Length: 400
Image 1 (tube, helix red, strand yellow):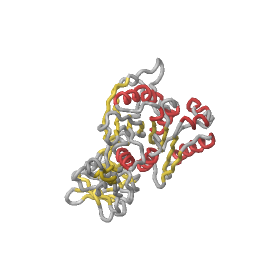
Image 2 (image 1 turned 180 degrees about the horizontal axis):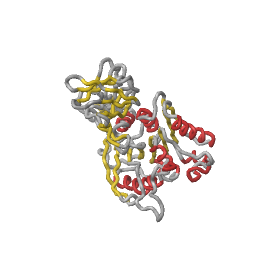
Image 3 (image 1 turned 90 degrees about the vertical axis):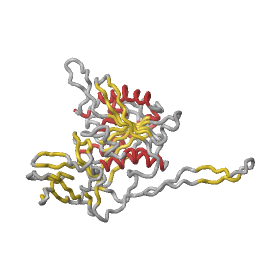
Image 4 (image 1 turned 180 degrees about the vertical axis):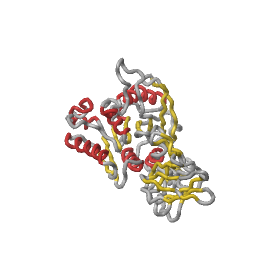
């Protein structure tokens, strides 16, 4: 790992003191990139000190499972299953086909029972704790930890009158947040997808490294990032009504209410925020992208930046775009003046359903004259690499 280089510019000799006076320039940081894999390496997602799984030079994965009494052990990874072979010492082994770069969940099936691999760190995904593996992307640097100033990821609990439950959000504060107690920051509200939770962006998503690196390069404005749990069911439905907040028809009314009436005031009270719409953004991945557009487009008095990664605005085929989201798009000229950034992205290997949803929304915005940024991620599917790339782009557009 290389260390940062700090450059100083001498201004001259101080006449009164006879001393050299120097003005410090902005630090110049040297970033390291992911090197090629020339021999099998232990996965970065392994439990600390554990050798296997290993990623091979062709990006296949070799796994080892200690299950001496098992009759059959199978690895489920990357959309395929691999039967393991038992050796005399009771250890089971297999090597997968080459895997796609990026982060992927996987499971071990022992005599028909799906379990997590104890050799892997655990990640909340697929609606439960699961094993995960990072397949290195050679040549990248933007989501790797670098020798730059780092922010903090904090845990914030707050009571919700709407859901009648304690809720938890993760909050990223940028480097230097605790050094200047008078400085205030803009805020990005960043949502996870279905089957995941508020931990996803700072673990699977590498959000904190992405922001740390962009801020160090002066490509992004230092900001606070709030990652809340996307599940919010109203505890107080009206008589005869079902609880609001489910995924039916992509309606997230309760979640929107929690964010706008409870979470934002709590964050503004607890952190040094710039508490106005020009300094507030919302975005999310997949389900969180749909939530972000519903939240932002129905609350334009609170958000000036709206983004969705593999999840965008959803407009029914029989609904004119001018009538969608309470008429948010009715006057394109006024909308473009008010909303600074609308961002939508999709992976080119995603399912037809996801691709059509996001691409159709992009076309609808074009036809309506709505300014927006549209990005297609080459070679990625409905996965964290698509969303890391999207956040890396989106964060550079905010608060400028």
